[in-house]
Image (cartoon, rainbow, N blue to C red; front, side, top):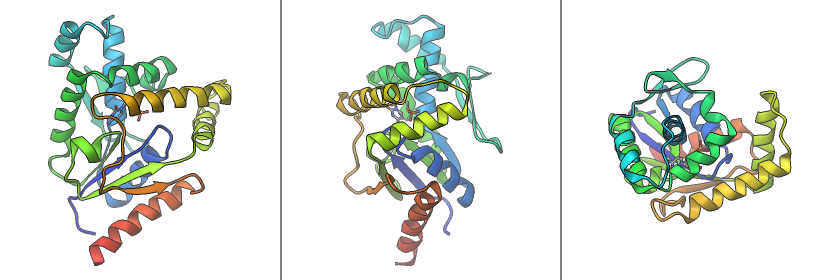
Length: 225
Ligand code: DC
């Protein structure tokens, strides 16, 4: 396969995009960038500094010197915020909710998009998020939009939580997903939506391996066309 593509994968929470992106990156020996983790790191930074999300001046100061790094590791990428490994912390429920709230703010998005464009500038990258195909890399070589029914997505999130030893009620997980979908879809700046030229993949009844295969087939097909 030709090297150096930019591959954009967007979709709602728990649609399968992160797992698929990670596995595809491994197969293609591409860099994987989870942009959701960057919004999560931003949310954690605001929380640590007790910044009110309405206070744009303080947010702007925070964004001027924020340092977010994604470092490759065999077991999965590690996320660093201002030098600290925050990989596990940013997956906790308070940060999940706060990340969706901070992601509606224009100056936060501008900064994240700037960082993401730098990270992907060399190509050979798979980036997943909500606005990669529409805003970050509108000229990406490949664009996918992954979806799945809310019940299946809630079950996936619930199973992940249970595997980590967390006790969650599946109904609450579903409610939280619906809240996040609405917040991410109805915001003013770069709302979650499928790019017109993205290929939609419904993962409701696909295994992770099938999802990866589906993307790979699309890439191969286009290369051989
Ligand atoms: O993909 P995730 O669940 O880790 O994302 C956390 C939040 O960040 C999500 O609610 C929406 C926001 N997000 C975004 O607005 N744009 C992106 N490119 C990625 C995530």
